[in-house]
Image (tube, rainbow, N blue to C red; front, side, top):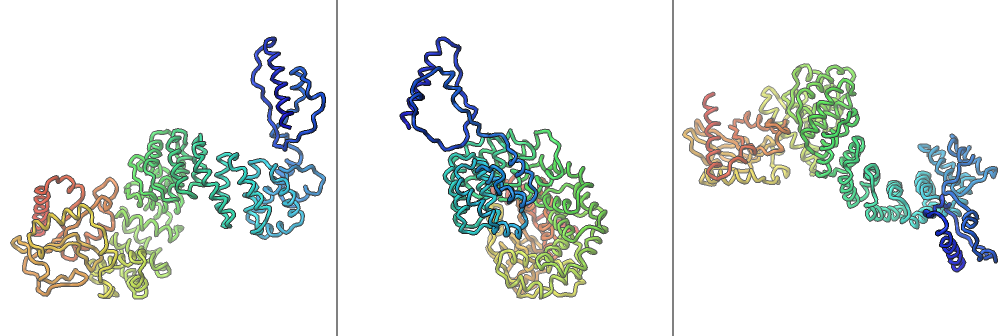
Amino acid sequence: MAAHLVKRCTCLLREVTHLIPATAPVGPLRLSGVTHRTLTFSAPSPTSHSPGPLKELVEKEQVFSPYPQLQEVDYLIEKATRPAQLLELLNGNHSLQHNHRALIVIQLSRLLSGKPEEKALLVQDVRFQQLLCLLNSQISQVWHGTLVKLLRSLYALPLPKTSKELRSVEQEIRWRLRRLKYKHLAFLAESAASVKEQHSQELLTELLVHLERRWTEIEDGHTVVTIMVKAGHLSESLMNRLEDKCLELMEQLGPEEMRKVLLSLAAQNRRSVPLLRAISYHLVQKPFQPTKGMLLDVAYAYGKLGFHQTQVTQRLAADLLSLLPSLTPSEVAHCAKSFALLKWLNLPLFEAFAQHLLMRAQHITLPHVCNILLAFARLNFRPEKEDHFFNVVHEKLEPALTSLEPALQVDLVWALCVLQQVQEVELQAVLHPGVYKKFLESKSPKDQSTFQKLLHINATAQLEHPEYKGPLLPASAMAPRPLTTGRNVTRLQKELQERLKTLLGEADRGSFEVVTQYGWVLDAEVLMGSEGQFLPLRDFVSPHLAQPLGSQPLPSGAKRLAFLCWEFPNFNSRSKDLLGRFAMARRHLLAAGFLIVDVPYYEWLDLKSEWQKDAYLKDKMRKVVAVELAK
C-alpha cells in the first residue's frame, strides 16, 4: 500500500513538472477539507499506474468536507424539547451517523438538567442503553468538540461507576489529548473536577499537566480569562502561568474580562500584586461606562484581597454614590462591607448608606442591618442622624438578638460598644454565663478572638456604664489568653522598648507588653511621680492588670502613663483616624485612669537618630502631663 501511494505521488509531481513551462505559475493545492474517516486501500488496478494529464487526475480526486451540510436529523435533535422526541430518532427511520448519537446524548443531558428522577429512568431505558452501546463502538469517529461535550454530559447523567461507556470515552480523550485545542482541555478539566471517582481524577491530573505545558498556546485575552475562571483553581502552578499570560495580554482585556479576573483572584484568595496593579491602571485609564454589577464586584474583590488603589477606590465611591438609589438593601450591605474591608471611609457614600437604611427601615432585614453596623464600627463612623439611625438599629436587634448565633451576638454588641451606642439589655445578653462559657472553654483561634471581644464588652460595662449592675465576667476569665501573650513584636515596638529602657535607667521602673483585664495590651507602662521622677511599678497596686501586683497605694500626684504604638494597619486608609477597634482601646484606657502617650508610625519614621527618638519620647510625656494638669 505504501509503495502504491509513493508511485501515485510521483506521477502527480512528474505531471506538474511537465506543465509548469507551458502554464502560469500554479499556486499551492488546497483541498476544501477531509472528513475524519478511516483510510482504506483497494487493490491496484492496471490503469492506476499510467499517469494521465494533471487536470484529469485532480478531477478524479474526490473532495471531502470536514463539516458536511446539516441534515434533517440535526434540526430534529436541536429542536427537541422532550427526551421522548430524541429517543424516537433511534427507531431506524433516520440515517444516524456516529456524531448524531453523541449529539442525542448531549441533548438528553441538557433537557434533564436538574431532574434526577427522570435521569434515573433514562439510564434504565433499553433504547438509551442501546444508544450508548452503538456510540461506544464508534467512539473513535466522534469529532473532538462533540467528544468533549459528550464526556461532560455522561458525568451529568447518573451512570454506574463501572460503566464501560464512560471509561471508553475517557480513554478516547486520553488518546486525543495532544490533538485537542487548549480551550477543550480547560473545558474537560472543569468537567472532570466535578467528579470524585478515581478514574476521573486520574484524567484530571493528565489534563492539568497538558494545560501547564501548553500554556504558551494562548493567543488572546478572552481565552486566558475563560481558562482562569474555569480551571485556574485546580492547579496553583497553572494559575501562576495564567497570571503571567494575563499580564502579557492585559491590553486586550475589556472591563468585563477584568471583572472576571478579579473575581477569580478573590475566590482563590490570590493577592497577585503585579496583576492587580495592571488591572487598576487600565480601570483608571480606559474610558468605559461601568455597570452596577461591575462596581460591586470590583469593590468586593479589592476588599477581599485587601488591595488599596486610591484612584480606583475613589472612582468606585463616586460611581456607586450616583447609583445608590437603584441599589437593593443587600447590595448596599455588601458594598458597605467591601469598603470597610478596604478601610476606606468616604463620608458622602457612608452617609448615603445610612440614609438608605432609614428610608427602607420597614423592609430592611436583620442580616443587612448587621452588615452595615459592623462596617460602620470597623471604620468608627457615626452618621449625622445618629440618634434616628441607632433607634432603628435597636428596634431591629432587640427582639432577635438572643435568637442569633452566640458569635454574631458578640460581634453586634461589640460593634455597638465601639460606636458608644450599646444598651444595658444588650450587655446583659452577651455577658450572661450561658454565652461566655462557650468561648471561655474553647481553644479554637476564632472562639478565642470572640472571647477577646467579650473582654472589651466587659470593659465597656465597667468603665463607660457605671449604672450597669451586671452580670460581668468572673475574675478567673481575666487571665492572659494565648491570643494576647503570643503576639509578634513589630520594629516600632522593639525600638520604643529600647529607647524607654535607656530613659528609665532601671528595669523595675517600666513594664512592657502589659496585659490588662480590659482585653488590651499596653506596649509600655510607666509610673511618674508628682515631681516628674519615675517610680518602681511593682511596689504599687495595679488594679488594671489581669493578675494584680503590689500592695502600696499610689503616691499623691502620681500618674500612670500608657505607651501605645500605632502601626499603619491601625488607621483608616489615607487617614490619620484610628479604626474603631483602636479608638475604643484608647477610650477604655483613658477611662481606666491612664495618660496615653501615642506613638504613631508616621511620626516615629521621621526620627533618624537615637537622640531624636529620646527627645521625642520626653516631649510626648511632658505634653501629656501638662494637658492633664491644665484640666
